[in-house]
Length: 309
Image (cartoon, rainbow, N blue to C red):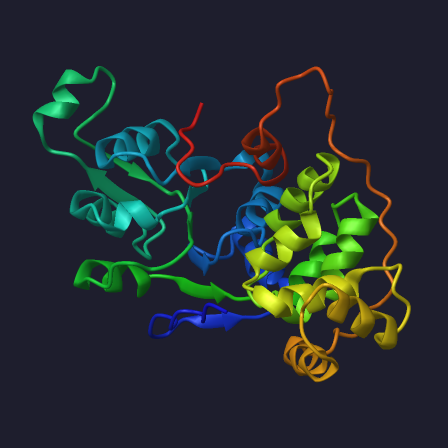
C-alpha cells in the first residue's frame, strides 16, 4: 500500500470527518481567514467545503492561470474564495505571489497586476482591495519553495488522512448500493488508501455484469493467489473455511497450507456497525450517454483539472 506523504512542518493531521467538519464549519462561519486542506483524492474534501459554504463562496479551479486567477478574484472580491486542486498553482511563481497577497492575515488585502494585460482587459484594474477569506484544497504539496512556505505560515494547514473505516462510514451518508457497500466494508483491512470513488466505480462494473469484486481487490493491490483467496472469502455461496479450501485447491491455487498462509496475510475484517443504506441511485437512463466522469462530477463536484463552466 502507498504510504502517506510527510505532512508539511506545522501542519495538523486530521484522522476523522468530525475534525474536518469543525474546521470547515469555522471557515464557513467567517472565523478563519485562511484554511489549507491537503488530502488524497476521493475523501470528500471538496464536497465537505461545498456543503458548508453553499453559494456564498467563489469557487476557482486550480488549473486557472495566474492572470485568470487575478481577474476572477477582482470580479468576486469580498466573497469567500475556495481554490480547488491548488497543486498546479504552486508551480507558478506569479500565482504564488498573488496567493501570498490574497492570504495576508489583515482583514483587507491589496492585490495588484502591473502589466499590459490589465490595460487590455476592460474593467480589470491594475490593483484592488478585497476582504475575501480563502480556503485552498490540494491533493498533495508538491513544491516546498520559500514562497509556498510563507503562504503556509499565514493560515491553518490541515493534512486530512482518514482511515478506510472513516471513509466507509462517511460514504454510508450518500451511497446507494448495499451489496457493493457491504463488500467494501468486509474488505476494509485491504484498502488502506480507500477512495469514495471506489464505491461508484465498483457499482458501475456491477451494473455492467463484470467482475467488480475482483477489480476492486486488484485496485487495492491484491494480486495472484492472495486475490483468489480474497475472492473465495467474499463468495457468499461458500459458508465455511473448509469449502473455501476445497475451492482454492480445485482452482489450482495450491494446497491447504498455502490457502491459510495467504488468508493470514489478508488480515481480519474490521468491526463495523450494521449499516442499512436508504439512498436512491443517481438518475441513470439506459438510453442516455452518461459517462463515468459525468456521474462522478454529479456526486463529488469539480474533478481534477476540470475547467470551470
